[in-house]
Amino acid sequence: MTRVLIPLLTVSALALMPLAAAAPAFAQESVFELGNRSDTMPDVSEYQSVRKGLLLEEKKEDDEVLEKDPMDDEGKPVALTYEAVLKLYKDGQYERALPHLELLASGGHMGAKEILGIMYNLGQGVQKDPTKAYEMLLPVADQGRALAQHHIGVMTFTGAGTPQDSIKALMWLQLALINYPDGPEKDAARRDRDSVYGRLNRRDRENAMLMTREWLTKRGEAHLLDMQ
Image 1 (tube, one colour):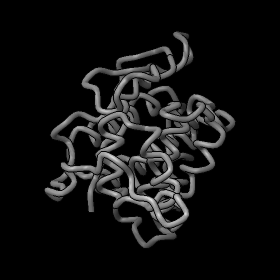
Image 2 (cartoon, rainbow, N blue to C red):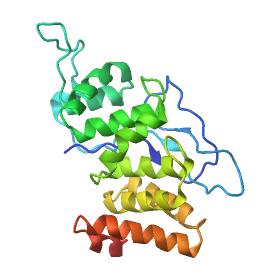
Image 3 (tube, rainbow, N blue to C red):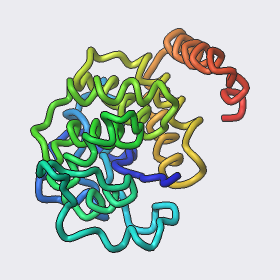
């Protein structure tokens, strides 16, 4: 299964700015920040686009995405493979990737749903719509996908597309930390988790950890919390 680090979070920023539409999704630099500076906001950071070299191995044919998308007899687009669509997304061809992601998502592909939610969250090839993004990402996060959980955690903390709730945000960030494999994205989730954790009082921390344990227990994974 191909793993993609779409926007990661770090702890360096204090203000939220929208992603520039022309910025490729895999740019090396951070492209926007969270919230305005205030004494009450934790240092939850910028989303950072995926860098080349942070993907798992892809099939060779993925390097040769078709110049023109295949169409059926009625002139409707035929879905590309998920790997091919990832390459379009990686190359910043959001408008071209969009219909294929929608086709894959309509068939239940969780990875496609995840990327679509992120595109609506960041305004990549579509009008930015945090509410729609949250609605798309939440069921994906609930399936245990770390990237979606990371986004949901930040959106819940900032109140983007959903009421602000720092306790739930900490739960989602903790789950993202648990579910990410070792690597830079896990390190980013840890920093974000620690940043939010450090701003909550003891009772709120305990409530967040209890919610995390309950979420994991329902899936027979409660032991994972003790490993972090």
